[in-house]
Length: 341
Length: 266
Image 1 (cartoon, rainbow over the protein chains, first blue to last red):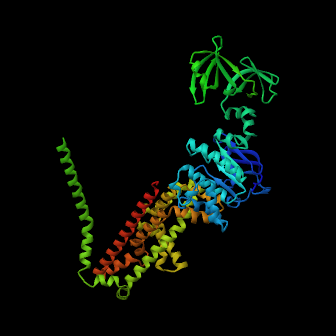
Image 2: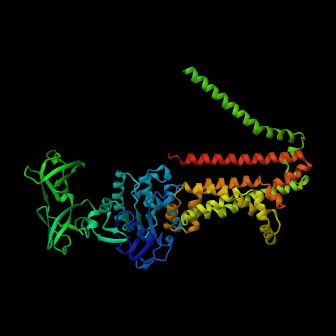
C-alpha cells in the first residue's frame, strides 16, 4: 500500500493578532514522512490541525491525493492521528480502541485487523488491557495502531512522543519510522525536538512565525541551513565574528566557504557548529579553556579567544589535557557556514 | 508524658462519641417518632405496600406518587438531554462561556422557590395554554430547579477527562458529533451523569413549594393533603419517601467510591 500526495496551498490562519499560518505552502509526496520542526507558537501544530480538519484555515487550500478537502469536516477526511496527550478512550480496551474506527467504517474483519495492528506495534499480548493499565509508551503505541488500523490516506503525528521519558522516546521514534516505512502511509510529524525530527524524517520542514524557513533532507537542514534561524534552531551554533570576502568568510584566521554566497563583503557573524571546532593544548595558543562539560562519548569545551566565546565538541578522551585555564589553539574545519544576518 | 497522651486520646474519644450521640439523637429521634406514630395503626404499613388497595383507598395519594415518579424520571431525562450536550459543547468550543453557563446554572440555588414561583406563574399561564394543566408540566420548572446540582456534577465529570482530545481522536477516526457524545464522552462520564440523575430524582421527590403554589399534584402535596385526614398514613408515606432518598444518595456515594477506585492505576 502506498500513500497519497498532500498539498497545502497558501494556508493562512490568525488567532487574534498572531499569524499562526502565514501563507504556508507545503507539499508531501506519497509515502513520505515530513517533520515540521519549530519553536512553540511557530504554527506547526496549527498546520497539522488544519490538515486534519480540526482547525479551519482563514484562507488557502488543502489537497489530499489531488482532491480538495478544505471544506470537509475532520470525520470525513480519512486521516489517522496520534495526539500529544494520551487519547485512548478510557472505557475501551486496547483492541476495542483499535476497532473503534474500523466499526465506524463497517468493516467485518475488525477483530483480525485489530489484533494484526497490535502485533505491528509490538503489543500482541496487551489487547485486553485498559489504557490505565498500560504505560505511556504502550498507550501511544496503541494510539498509533488505532490511527493506522483504518488505513488512512495520511497519518498525522502531533508531538506523539513529548509526554514520554527519554529512553522510551528514542525507542518509539525508531519504531514509528520502521512502521511508517513498512506501511508506506504519507505522514506529517510535528515536533519541537530537533533530534527527533532529524532522526525520523525523510524531509524536515523548519517553521518560524507561520512560514516554512527551509524544507530539506535532515542532512541538508543541518549542514546547509538556509537561514540563520535554521542554523540556530537546529543544532548548537557558535556566533563568531568574521569578514566576508566573496563566497567565503574569514573567521579566527580560517577561511570558511559560505552555505549561501551573495552576502555583501565586510563584517558579519558566522554560525559555526561546535563539532567543526577543534581545540588542542598549545602553550602558544590564543585561547583559554573556560569550562568543560562531560556528555558521555563527547564533551563540550568552552574557550575564550580574546572577547569571543567558542564552544567546541571534542572527544571525551581529550578532556584531561584541557583543564580550565589551559592555553589552547582553536581550529575550524572548512565546512560551509551560514551567516547571521 | 505517655500518660498525658493516653488521657488526651481518651478525652478525644469520649468527645467524639458524645458528638455522635447528640447528632444521632437529633437526626434519628424524629425518624423513630415517625416509625412509632405510623405503626400505631397496624393497618398502615401493610396497606402502603399493597398498591391496588392503596390506590383504591387513597386515590389522591396514588396520583401524587405516580405524578412524582413521572416528574422525577422526566426531569432527569430532560436535564440530561439539555445539559450533557451543552456542557460538552461549552468545554469543546466555547470555553469562554463556561463561567457564564455555570453562573446561570447556579442561579436557581440563590432564588428562593417562592420567588421562583412568582416568576413562573405567568410563564405557566402560557404552558397551560399550550400543553394543558397536567402535573407533568412541572417538569420544566423542576429542570431549572435541579440545574445547579446536575451541572456541577456533569461539569466535574467532564473536568476529569480530556474531552477535547478524546473528541478529536474520535472525529479523526470518522465519528460525527452524535457518535462522539454517545459513544465516547458519555461512557466516560457515566458516574457523573448517574449522580446528576440521582440528585435530580431525589430533589423532585422532595419538592413541595412549587407544586403546591401552582396547584399541581405531586407526592409531597398529596402527603400534606393526606395529613389532614389520615395522619398515620401520611407519616408512613413521608418516611418511605425519605428512605428512598437515602437509598438514592447512598447509591450515589457508592458510585463515587467506585469511580475513585477505577481511577487508581493498576
